[in-house]
Amino acid sequence: MSVALEVLGDRWSLLIVRDLMIRGFRSFKEFEGSGEGISTNILADRLRKLEKAGIIDSESEKSDGRKVNYRLTAKGIDLAPALLDLLIWGARHEETDAPCALIEGMARDRERIIEEVRRRWQQRDSTPLQVNGKWILP
Image 1 (cartoon, one colour):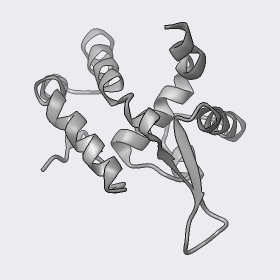
Image 2: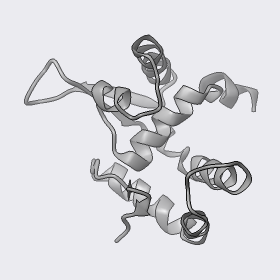
Image 3: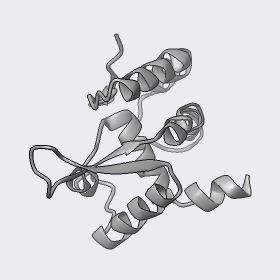
């Protein structure tokens, strides 16, 4: 437990991993504009920390070498079940904007969501899994 908390024990690191998995975010600018209110220096620090821990990789975009995209590694994608369980737990037990039906849908479709997260990761598909509170599952 202490090893996991050392790497992921802050709010911002978990939100970055969530956004890579669920929202399809890839670039610094997308993370910065997520509405969470993270400052640029904290964001840069957490991205470096997650990359050093082997949770994410960075790669320059082919069409514009100045733009860097981030992607979960195999180690990072293995966090999908735990992160989904944290999302469900938080929404069930704390005040959130998530409707009850969304939470119950996440719990009911847990395995399908995790399977789709892994499929999209393997295929390098950054299409969001959730848009405006609705899951986009095949």
